[in-house]
Amino acid sequence: MLPLPSFKSPLTVIIRSLLLVSSLLVSFVACQRVSPSEEKGSPAYQLRDIAYNENLKPFYHGVASGDPLADRVIIWTRVTPEVIHSVNVSWEVATDSAFTQVVQTGELTTSQDQDFTVKVDVSGLVPDQVYYYRFRALDTNSSIGRTKTAPDTAQDSLRLAFASCSNYEFGHFNAYGHMAAQPVFDAVVHLGDYIYEYATGVYGDTAQYGRINVPAHEIVTLEDYRTRYALYRADPELQAAHGSHPWITIWDDHEISNDAYTEGAENHDETEGRYQDRRQAAVQAYYEWLPVRGTPSDPLYRNFSFGPLAQLMVLDGRLAGRTAQADADSLAVLLDSSRTMLGATQREWLQQQLAATEATWKVLGNQVIFSGLDASALPNTPDKFTDMWDGYPIERAKLINFLKEQGVENLIVGTGDFHSSLGMEIPNDPFRPATYSRADNGQRLGVEFVVHSVNASNINEWVGADTVEQIRQVYLSPKYNPHVRHANLSDHGYVELRLTPQAAEIRWKYLNTLGERDYSLKQTHVMRVSAYSSRLEPVNDEVL
Figure 1: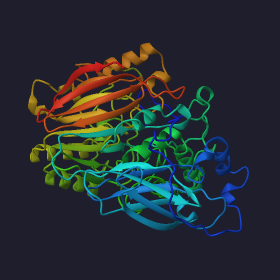
Figure 2 (figure 1 turned 90 degrees about the horizontal axis):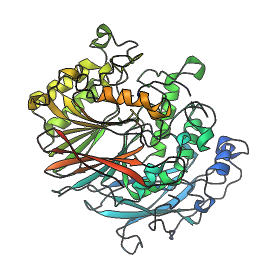
Figure 3 (figure 1 turned 135 degrees about the horizontal axis):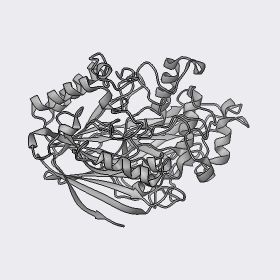
Figure 4 (figure 1 turned 45 degrees about the vertical axis):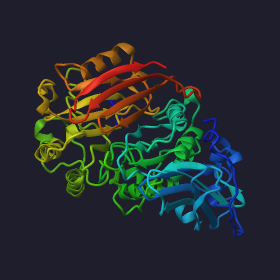
C-alpha cells in the first residue's frame, strides 16, 4: 500500500573493517553441468553481469544474522556455485573478529532445493554478547558478520532500528549504509516491503537512478522470487546492514503482491495463475533468503524478550488471517464483524503476550497504521484507508478494549508501509480521531511511530510541493487528527528507537539523497515519551 495519492503503476565498504576475509575448512563435491538457471540470457545470468561483485565469489550475497534470543541467533549466507550440485559449508562463531576465541563451529550441506542458502540456528550462546561469524565453501571464505544476543537481565538502555519499504529501482539504499556504520543495534526490525514484486519501470524511476529489476517481469514463480531476492541481497548497502546487526523481519504485501491478504491480492489476476501457488512461492523464498527462525509452515508472527526493559512482538497483518480489504469506506462495509486483520488465532496470541509480559515497554512491529488517520478534508480521497487498521475497526476495537481492561501501559507501535513519517498518540477511538483530547490522559493508549521508507517513493515524488504541504497540514490538523504530533511526507531513511526505564526516544533519521551513495543525514527529528505517560513530546532536532 502507498500513502496519498495512490498509484497502481508507474557501503562501498562491505562492513567497514569488520568484513575481513579469513579461513575455514570445507569441501566441495565436483559436478558435471552448469545450472539451467545460470545459463546465458537467464535472469540469474544477468545478475552476474549487473549486480554481483566478483571479489565476493561465491558469497555474492554476504552474510546475515537474525531472530536474536538470549542464548541463540540465526546466521545466514548463500553460496553461488558454478554448477548444480550440493555444496558443503562450514561455519564458526567467535567472541572476537580475529576468531581467536571460537565458541561454536559446524558443517552442513546446501543445495538447489533451498536455493543454495545456508541458515544455522546457533545455540549455547551468552546473553547480551556481541559475536562474530563467518562461513567457508568452495575453498573460499565469506565476509565476517557481527551479531548480538538479546539480554535477559535488567539493562540501562536498548537500541532498536526500524526500517520499511526498500525498492531497488527508486535509488540507492543509503539508509542501510548509514545503519551499517552504527554501533551494534540490539536488533534491526524490518516491518515489510523488503522487496517489491513489480516489473521493470512499473513502480520505480529507472531513468533517474539506473537500477533495473531482475527479472524484468513481475515476479510470480519461485524462481522469480528467488532471483529478485538475489538482486536485492547483492546490494552493498543492504549486505553491510545485514552483516553489522541482527535483524528481525516481518513481511508486508510486496513480498507477495500489492495489497495481499490471505486469499488474494490487488495485484494478482487469473492470468498469473493460482494465487495460492504464488503465495506459496513467495513464502518459501522469504524463508530461504531471510535470517528468520522456522519454516514456511510456521506462523511468522513471533515475540522477542529483551529482558525486563522490553518485549517486542512482530505481527503478520497479511497472510495469517487477513480478509480482503473493503472496496468502499462506508460504515456498513467497514463495520462488518467478519472482517479481520490478524485472524482470531493471532489476535489471541497477541493478547496472551501482552497480558503475560512484565517488561516495562511493550513494542509491536506492525505493518499498517493502527491509530487512525482522517483524510476526509482532502479532495478526491477516501475518508478511510481501507488497507490500514481503519478498514478493520471491529477487530481493532477488540484489541483496544483488551488494552483498557488489562491496563496495558507503555505500549509503542512501530509501523511501516506508509512511505511517510508520523508520530502519533494512540486514541481510545482511532476510528474517530477527531474526538481525541490530549488534555484527557485516559484517552491515550500508547504511541505509534510510522517509519518513512528506505527509498520507495514518497508523495513528493509524484505531486508538487504545495500539494504535499496541503496533505501534511491535514494530517497535523487539530480538527481532523489531533493525535498526530509529527509528519514528514518527503524524506527517506529509518527510525532508531532508544529505550530506557524512564523514557523512550523515537529518532527519525533523514538521509540527504538517493541519487548517489551518500550515507550522510540532513536531520534527525527526535520525540520523547516518558514512561507511563503515552504523551509524545518534541526534542530539539539534530541538524547534521
